[in-house]
Amino acid sequence: MLSAVMHPIQRGLPFTRRAAAAPAGWLKREEAIMGTAISVELWADDRRAGEAACAAVMDEMHRIDRVMSPHKPASELSRINRGAACGPVALSEEMYRLVERALEFSRLSGGAFDISYAAVGRLYDYRRRVRPTPAELARARDCVGWQMLELDAKAKTLRFAREGMCIDLGGFAKGHAVDNAAALLQRRGIRHAYIAAGGDSRVIGDRRGRPWSLAIRDPRRPGEVVALLPLVDTSVSTSGDYERFFDVEGEGGERCHHLIDPASGRSPQHLRSVTVLAADGLVSEALSKTLFVLGVERGLALLARVPGADAVLVDDQGRLHASPGLLPGGDAAVA
Image (cartoon, rainbow, N blue to C red; front, side, top):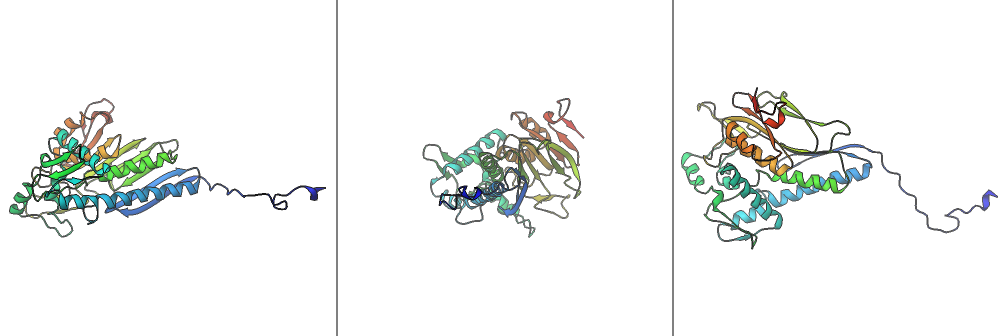
């Protein structure tokens, strides 16, 4: 008889109803962290797992902001800036590796990349149109110089050789954050994703059968683009003079922007934007800042020494320059 068939609940046997997997699809989440727009878009085979992955990305971004923000008194970076002129300051393993990489980029670029530029950078206020006087700039420049950052590999400490020095990891902290987020997603089995932190982004895989597309914005015409790049498994960073800036009246059109040449303490005027493609975000962001300081000729010469890196540069006349790896013939070009 049908009524004699055992039912798990009737017989007191353990029975658990397995929740149906949430439908697969694209998910997107955005937040404002680290003073910029953070976004993640990914394909998830299970919606709940995808939402958890998006949340984990944002948690990691908040963690890095707590550690590396120069504006948070409790951050590790603020602790370093308060104490390193008085004596060696112990670093976390993560911070030690970042400072170590920063010094490598300083050596590679001849000082065009220098996290000690912060002694000058903190004198600018772009919202209030404030810049240092010549006397203030001269004093601050005496406190800039990567050679005065004494990193002890054995003790994992950092000391500033001169009072008044400070550092800022804004040159590649967001790229590092994007790298960490990408690794986190890959550990969770995510195979198609786009992560962005302001001008720094990374794509994992493709967009399920077609490349991701990155538009390089026109630095002077809002809403227009100068190039469109198809991307797969790539990190991209763009540095431009159009985000945080003010124009100085009566000085030949000088634009004060957040990209600072450590040697002069002023904003370079020979480029409008630099976009770098590389294997990871830390490298792409550091190179985008470096090339902006060096300019087209010296910048592309340095880029040629970094395997797998390419760049698109927009000069002060609006002309496009591209590295050989982005061009059919393999030769650098200008448009």
